[in-house]
Length: 111
Image (tube, rainbow, N blue to C red):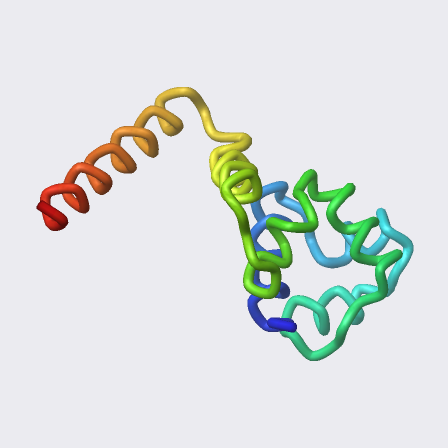
């Protein structure tokens, strides 16, 4: 299990919502110290805590565990959706344009 990467991803999502560790801990009924330890990858978390976290942060379990779970096409699309969730339409269009440009470049390299 990639606890450090999981913790970093949790921290990023918490900060996107402008939540402090204290506020998040309060919302899911755990200690602030425990949230900090999870975010630093120092502690594992129970399934119950994992579910509380993803529900509170509005993310998916596979997004959070992407470094430990093998993704298929459907999961990959869900992950892409997660990356742009909460972005405005202009930012989403920019991501799409960048993806098109990158894929075009990869196609050129293959030719």
